[in-house]
Length: 114
Length: 141
Image (cartoon, rainbow over all chains, first blue to last red; front, side, top):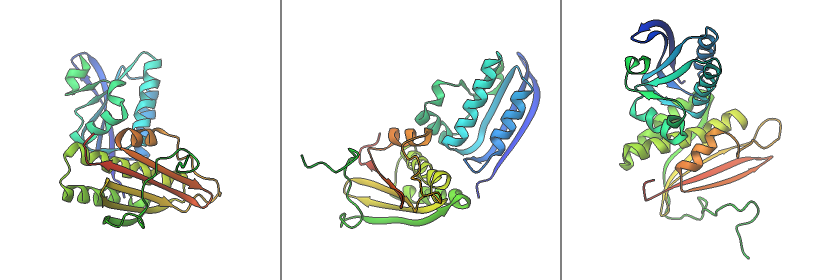
């Protein structure tokens, strides 16, 4: 069974408050927690939502779809979503899917939160 | 014109025709085993000595095909991976959805990724099920 732990926390970065959603494990069509948490956090209208993928070992098109959905929701209300430090495996999927041309990818939360 | 038949699909040898094919993996899967299927594919491509990017492409493509069978097809299926003279051939088959309608094998983000990552895609889909075969050629892309 694919296991994914999704946690959301509110932080204060150099540029102001931000929400960080940390993904640990693997994200695919059988891990609905990703979409559930992203939608719940988007509803709180954060200024900046960071998806920390530094401990995400795999992501599939279904999980990518959830991130794109959150990105569109936030953009419509003037907020931003960015991905933080994806692992090489996840970076490869982002490249194949073209997501890296749609959503900003940063090396660290502070770099994205400026 | 002696084309491959309906659908303008590229013709790829089936298992019975590819006499030089060496089976690397022959495994059934369902929603609960997609994770272990990825591990199995990773072990195969590591054994083949594929570069990391190439290996990840194979793992992702096989996963997306299996995920389609889980989500839109029978809910379970079978993966056959073979080393052939054309390259690495991965075939995912399922017995079709309970509704009897063929699953929308040509739609979705996942299939778009598949087409971008592989050299050849062959799709056979009907009420009796679906069979998708992809080939990763010898030249990395």
